[in-house]
Image (cartoon, rainbow over all chains, first blue to last red; front, side, top):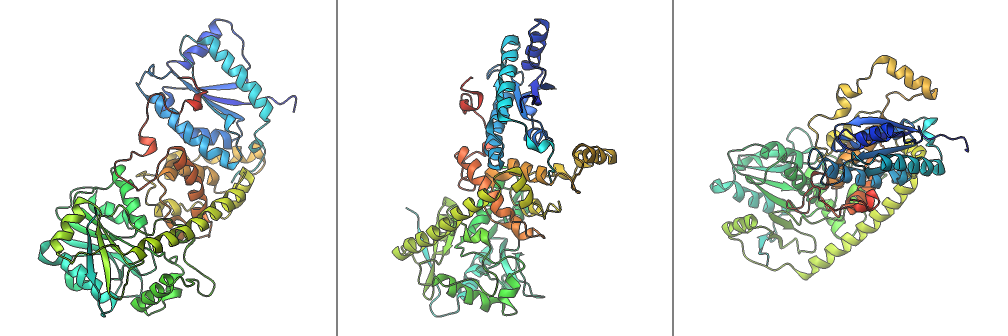
Length: 140
Length: 381
């Protein structure tokens, strides 16, 4: 377990969190390389299917991150994302997924430090949870 | 105070009294047509029929314990665009609740339809109803009402009412324009018609029926029935939760699923016009299957079974009205109703939402507010 390296799929919005990740990079901040960023135009277009698919395929956790409420480039996409994550957090734990495997955060374009910190924290949290067993198991 | 009218039965067979009543609805051009369940002339099968000719309702039997489809979908067909006429639809409580969800999803309209909700004691599945009714169509309905109302056992041979009905806490239509009630009412003498909306009140006034009060015995009888069903429902929730506590168990629960998607075809509130699972998105490249097989060493074909069911839960669970048509349509006896209702009980509670209660309550995933559900983002906003 000690050498378990979690894989985190992160859906990040183009305008805020992706830019923050970019800033973290240009600022030479370091954060664990366990996260695979998928740039979306808005967290409002993260379909619950994407999250479900990632977990069924064996991702250890999914991070969704976008603009702070009020800052959404499309006015309210992030508020829609919040309801969808709320929904997923009701459904997935019924089938044994720890709620902490799905995370929604707001990280603004200037918050590179916050992005690095969030990833660091999430990686250590998921390390505690252990691997998603579906990585090896057959899923119907 | 809701107005209640009295539909006299007095000695005549119940169905004759009902028939006479429904004929008056079609008389004098009150409605262009009635949507109500009838025994088909060619076979003892009960299906919703749209009747314009008052002489063609001889096979009607709204209390028959069968429920071939959720008729809300048919009312949606009639009302999603202007109908140029008025229709009265005779529906079970779960059909009315599904219809209200469809109205909110803009797939049905209320303007040209009057909802007549009947008390519902439950129904047998499509497979079991013919075994129950045999060839004696309407007589079997009488037999059923007698047994069910006297608190008798509705089970016969190796089958019983569908579990969805046994777990249903809505035997009475609270959102119908006009509720046609018989539970806790002296059926030999009369049925009651309770106006629950302005539209229902208007119709009741027009029909000029003698006024009456809801008998006290009705409240008690309904409460008793609901309590029995809630008890069954909660046991079902517990058993289903236990049987699907992790992904391996969920997989074994769904192991007989062949991805026919009948459950979502039958589902009245699975709202997508085109289901993503039949689009190009899931028309995978042949080599993709091979990659999947190589990654885990084995992949079940057809693929995406659990993915499909989880996605369906994300789509419809907040709107699930528990009619059980999913299980009714399943060719492989996967207890899908139990699963969907159990999950729905959690998602609906999370959004404090009761589907089918009112057109004024917005579906949880078509609305959003500032400053809500802050716990999701660790209190940050």
